Length: 341
Ligand SMILES: Cc1cn([C@H]2C[C@H](O)[C@@H](COP(=O)(O)OP(=O)(O)O[C@H]3O[C@H](CO)[C@@H](O)[C@H](O)[C@H]3O)O2)c(=O)[nH]c1=O
Image (tube, rainbow, N blue to C red; front, top):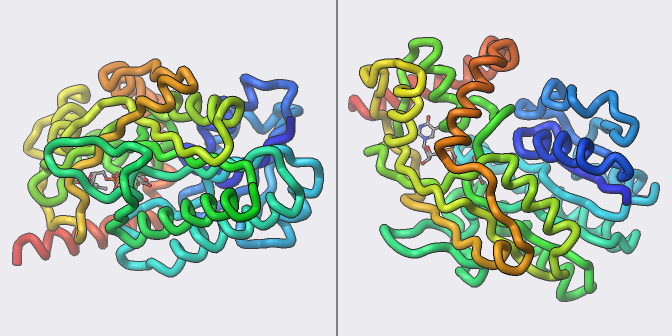
């Protein structure tokens, strides 16, 4: 089997590449990634020497390139390539529409042209919008995205669905809750808080800190996608989530406790506009139909993650010493100023 993985140098994508390349030595893997700010070839050191792995630098909106790769005998496409950060989508929505929607359409067209056996779209629970204090997102929940990011992912999901209904393309969509683990880019809550705490810097908590996310260790998400590739029924959507709901403030306090740091580092800052209050996934379908079970609890996953950041200081030091740090400092300053107005 030959699998084209797009966006395989980002957080979830690189974890997936490393997981699959190791698990299936007889498969061939091609990783197409544009290496934007969030992509990093260092994430792939475990795979790069393996004979069943090849990296190609390029964009999923480049039709000619995607066509040439798929024409070379690809059986399955797994699309991780996406602009993924909600805060960035609020200030720069264009690139989200281009990569997430138009890029997906290119992949679908090429998949259709070459009659591939399976197309898997890695999506997100954010397409369902927000929940109140109770209830869960099921695969039947209506799409009601609230940010330009989630709207672009929902648009892509609808295209994937349409290519199945109209052209019979064998597709699956996975919608997972918040992931955490190794190689998580430090603009996201968990790695940002770990790194700031280690550096003795302030930890910016948006709004009242009571927004709820449902956390899943990234390896459990990789195992779910592996199952969907092999067993997913064409045209189906599968929700993925580990029933680990936590408020943001709980997460931040937990990280400080694990690192032995003071809660005085916490700063409440201006809220994210359109901030979804609560996400919670009902993953009954993938559990009962495909036999997926997460291996990690939040307790085991967060300890393993913190340990990874302690052991891989060089990886994140390089990231925070570059342009990203200037961007982050500016964002933080703006949020603090707004909240003090
Ligand atoms: C970066 C940052 C975030 N937050 C809050 C906002 C959210 O309620 C929560 C998590 O924020 P983020 O880490 O940005 O993740 P979130 O917006 O939930 O979205 C993530 O999870 C989604 C899946 O639910 C993915 O589709 C997105 O690509 C991914 O970025 O923490 C803070 O309070 N302070 C912060 O500095």
